[in-house]
Image (cartoon, rainbow, N blue to C red; front, side, top):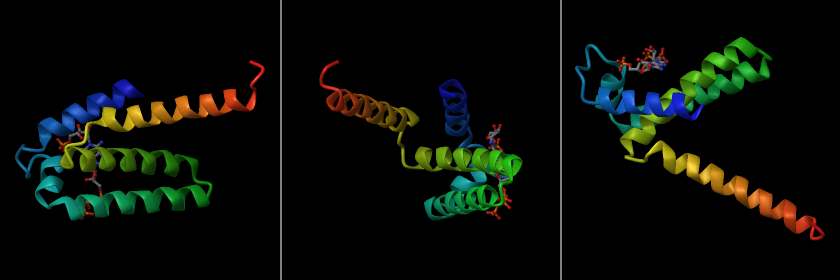
Length: 106
Ligand SMILES: N=c1c2ncn([C@@H]3O[C@H](COP(=O)(O)OP(=O)(O)OP(=O)(O)O)[C@@H](O)[C@H]3O)c2ncn1[C@@H]1O[C@H](COP(=O)(O)O)[C@@H](O)[C@H]1O
């Protein structure tokens, strides 16, 4: 998962400045942050709709669209994917500590 997302992050960073007629990433980036953010919102809604319809194949496709567009938005914000993954790791560590606190005898 990490490797796939990191590879896609690198591709997106390279494609941002490509020819917009040949690259979707470049075309979307050229349309500005508000448009990128709008696409993230649309893909999130489409993921929710697929989930509520119990459309598992649709949810997979829409989730992929959502993750891709989120990476395009993070790139536009100059936020490395690792910042988000590190935050998730930190929270996982916190929940481990909370579990330990609930079991003081360990
Ligand atoms: N993962 C993706 C990916 N997922 C979805 N999409 C594109 O996202 C678009 C979403 O479609 P929509 O119908 O929602 O949007 P649209 O009609 O194109 O645009 P709007 O009118 O809504 O603004 C489609 O054009 C898809 O092709 C992607 N485009 C690119 N990638 C990855 O990005 C890499 C670089 O792509 P290029 O920048 O095109 O070279 C590719 O090698 C892929 O790995």
